[in-house]
Length: 231
Image (cartoon, rainbow, N blue to C red; front, side):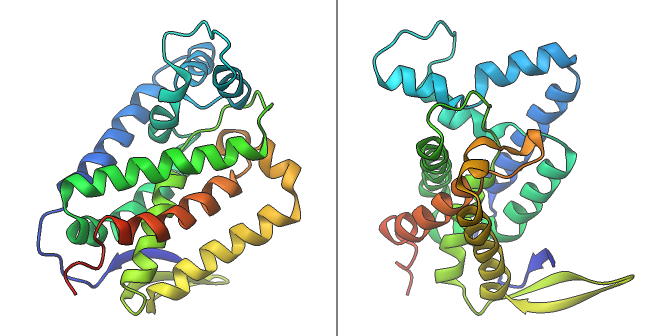
C-alpha cells in the first residue's frame, strides 16, 4: 500500500512542503556525488551520532564544526539511499500540503522541524551510547502523519495496491493508511528494542522509535499550533 495523492483541496500553495522536498533532493544529490569516505565524513558532521549527542549534553567538548544539537535538524535532510528518499518525499508530498494549509507556512515549518528534532531525541533516548549515525526525514514526516490523521481521518487517498503480480489503485481513508504505518512501527519497535536502537536506514534498518516519537509529537503539536482553528 503506497499513497499517491490525497483528494482534499487546499486554500494555499504549499510552498514550504515543496521547498522541503526540494532541499531534501538537493542534499541527496550532493551526497551521491561524494566518495564513500566523504559520505562517511558527511554523516559524521550532519547526522545525529547518539554517543556524541550524549557527550555534548553532559558538557563534554565535541571537536566538530557543527554543534551536536544542530544535528537534530540537519539530520532531517540526509537519506541513506534512493528508496529512503523517494518513500519519504512521497509521503511528505501526499500529506504535507493539507497540514501546511491548516497551520500556515510559518507554523508548518516550525511544526515540521520540531517533530523531526523531537523524533530524533526519542531514538537517541533508546540508544544513547550508539555510534551509528541516525538520519532521515521520517521522524518529521511521521509528525505530519499524526497531525493529518486527527485532522483528516476520513480523507480519501488514492493509493497504489500490490496484489501479488497485480497492481491497482484504490481510494482508501487516510486513517487506514496511517494506522497501518504506525501499528507496524509500534510492533517492530517493541519486538526488538535493542535492534531498533542501533539501526538506521543507511544500515538497512529502521529507526522505529523516531517514527513513533514523531507521530506522537505530531498529535500534540498540531492542535497546539492551530490545526483545528478553522473549524
